[in-house]
Image 1 (cartoon, rainbow, N blue to C red):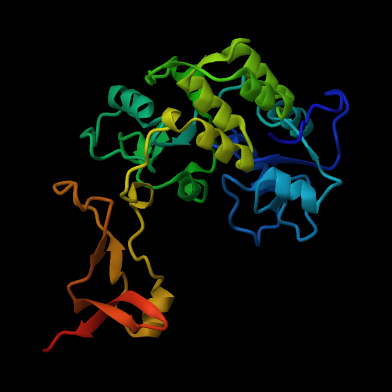
Image 2: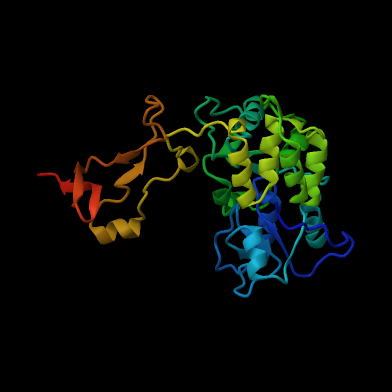
Length: 328
């Protein structure tokens, strides 16, 4: 399912290395990247591969670790534990007193439970949302959160001495436990399929299989999802295809809630070049209407809007949105 970073002895740490950024390790990888990459590079995100060095100074490859190794075969994949040994970041047992962590779909309930016990302002449920950032303490009020993502918080002088933490560190600091209780449904896969997974696995994945899968193929839907999370891109697709019942069907709607703080979908510079008002199209935020809330785009009332079908038989048809100026 991926290159095995444990083929070399853990005591022999490579000089040229790479590690893929995930939801779980991003908070540890990002500070090292920001401290070592050329400052002209502004974006390092989940799904990219952190590199000890890159010819252009970016210290990353903007794709998964398999593609990175294909292009830079001298770079050896490493585990998070090896990354910690190589870079010696703040150890997990040295927990900061000033910290922040971004709310995701997975951790929002857990973070908000702590916030409601510790904050004394802005406690209504709609204030702290997925995509916002939980804070040990807000610099000017008692809300314990910042209404933007962690990327924004990293760039603010008010929080320059704050450390981004992982959900594991959050639990250590706050003595909280996960509030999630996913349904565990017992299932059985074939021995042939289990062997196929095992033969393609890294050491970490083999350990997961040994813990969560019995020799006769008995396991749970939660374990299938866990194996999927550990797998590389191509194997993620295979696992979903092999076990479609273990993955809830995605909603037909798009969820824009993680970008709720974005106003103009089109930049001010582009809007100016088009001769249109800033923020003429925005993500709709209207919690009184679940049909449109974070699912739709708001079009400014500065213009009249017309949706038309356009095209020809040879080129095919398309939908087009026409803005027109309102009459004075």
